[in-house]
Image 1 (cartoon, rainbow, N blue to C red):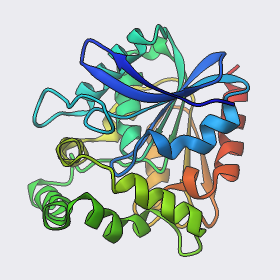
Image 2: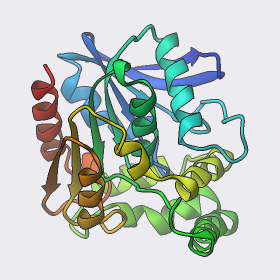
Image 3: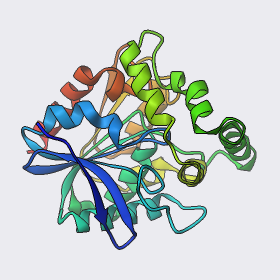
Image 4: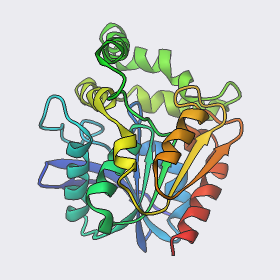
Length: 268
């Protein structure tokens, strides 16, 4: 199995991605402290049945920054639509992790005919309804750490938050190394999406069946909050992966992939 690294020209600008396999498109979106390379296990596991594509979100990897300084979920969803157009993908299976969940839900609300199935992992709900004071506190905490320490220092301080206490060393290294490569300009824009996003608003308008999965040891988006996200959809299935942290698909790829495979099979 060969994983190709690509740079795709879109109406938005260049978007970098990893791609493997052939068949129905399966498109994977990472979270705020991550990148396309975090989906290595899923690219390997599903490329015998699907055309698996993991993008670098705008401002990550080699992908062009968002146009607006303060982008929202609709802006990222619009870039996703342009990316799929450039890849000649009419519709696809969508998977969004953490902040990527905000992006895919906005996309599914606006272009439901382009979504064959939707799975979100350890979803970030966003702080759009939390009030200005909390938004400012969260923004300052994230960006203050980035300003003081840079991407490498941010990775050193925060990568462990994405994993359980029992995460294997290889998972810790992978999460750390990918986080250390974030671009400060792209991270700042993604932080604005997190501060202003409200996943529940989009979820309430999505009619297709959705699978929501979360690591049982996730301290970033704990299971109870993810259950509430699941309940915002008209039709959803909720699963907890025992013992796994926030980056559940990285730390426990076998368990995550079982849920994803079941989800894809149910959408046929």
